[in-house]
Image 1 (cartoon, protein in one colour):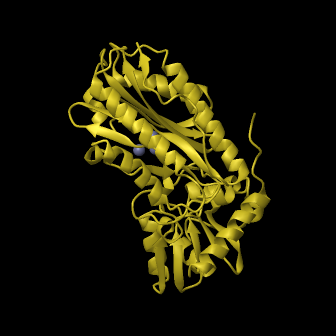
Image 2: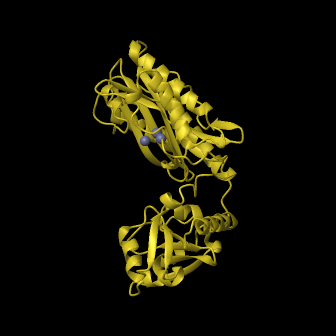
Image 3: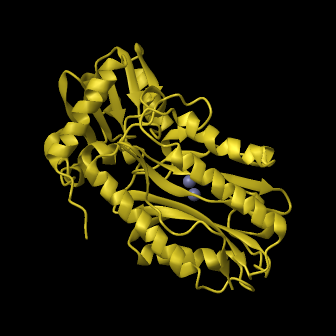
Length: 373
Ligand code: ZN
Ligand code: ZN
Ligand code: ZN
């Protein structure tokens, strides 16, 4: 089943909502350069993000306009949302920043896409010294956080593809192979299940499991290892991100089993805390309390989760200090872990969405410690 294509009207609605939200938070407008925000508002993903300025200007009292190099305009005009925007093109002998400023106005505070190139932002500041800027994820962190039904369908499909990947990798040989070979299997499986982009394939065996973002390397996996598998990417433009910890062979050290049980309980407890109105930090606290009560609090060294959508890491963050409340349609990971330096690590991660009366998981493979050969 393929998801419904987004229409120009979908994109227009997103831009209208963003323009209102920007005005409500005191911004004169939003400046969106190529990346996930531009894809969100227009469906446009330029073939390359270059030194030539491409920038969508969104403001409440005028129609959205895309500043675009003339040679790339034909590409931009083929974007799904093209009919919802105007175009202002420029050639190599023109100054794109003064063109942008004519559309933005010469004063006011603007929200800028997080990944805008510094040279572009500096160009705007030079061209309009009375403007000021805020990073979009700071000024409007929840801009893309609540997903609509079509986005949820894509995230669900990405999660199902990640689950299928996991079920397959359980049948692969582990003992005697290098981490990087298992990682290559994971990447192949994600692509075979419809991912167009693989963002990470962490295979962290034995002591390497104590590094949450370990790069799969040359270590040869051995009988008796706990192995953290964390993999994800984009399918149909939307993200997957799943972690399971497996064990090579059936003879599990007592502490590995105990820590795994604890992390599993923490993941479940945090999941059960999900419902509309609960602060993001309370999801983190729910997971953290279980692990602290079990005596491993100092080894749970990262936040409990992050949002997911057009990227695999984005707001909302399940972290102490994030007081924004959960809203139906938000999607994020719940991924507590315990990392014992020089020994082993355990992490369990599902993607979850907020529903009217609780949480719903987009991963449904078992959490129990699985045995691989
Ligand atoms: Zn991570
Ligand atoms: Zn992950
Ligand atoms: Zn994650």
